[in-house]
Image: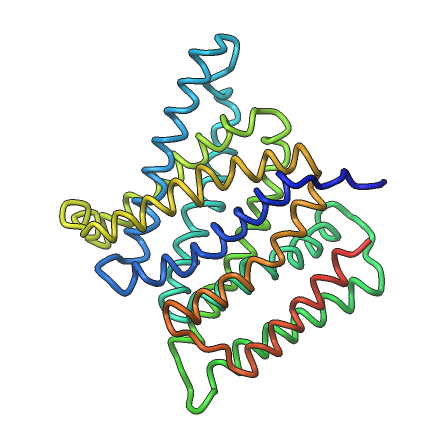
Length: 302
């Protein structure tokens, strides 16, 4: 099947999207170096984003009285699982990993390893066939991951924070894979905005107990302006506007073209991380990242 043509508007919007999402790792890294914790950033981001999505859903309901504002009760457990896998645990793992291992590694693992895990689960769960090239691709990605983790940890001397942070970040593509598999039927059944509202609100609410346990919920009353700007950027630009662009592009140019733009996201993160937070890409991390990228190419090519 021939893909839909990509117009100038769609290209511009997708470039904006990868800048938003690629820069989010660096914004989180900067916020972590101030007064915020991984738990507080995730909680404040998704409570704010969830409130904004709920407001938009309500306004859509007012404009179009026929638009549903609630899901069926039987689908609530699935929405809760989506919120836990795609928001609560995913961003707790990602932000903790950013704090320990860095923004660049988080972007490489989250963006490039996710297609690998989805390909593997497709063969196991959906019984899809996998060809020789995809097998080689999975192998390259696996070797690249080991090179990134071990090479970055043993560079000069053993760095336990980098090592354990990388292991935490390995949970992100697994969780995103679970979120993708669980969300397939939900997105087909409900309007994306309705589904996103539930997932975002529930994900934010599920983060509250972690904030209470972490004693970070108290930070809401004493955050600096720069910290609130970071939270607002993550909630509005990366979540609200970002997902609108994502679904608009999916509708206009299709999933294959839209997803292909995301492979540039780690490059945006690496460049911005080197400029703003002083992260350096060592030879092992560069080689490992290239191996992972080659693996993704082999797995996803037609």
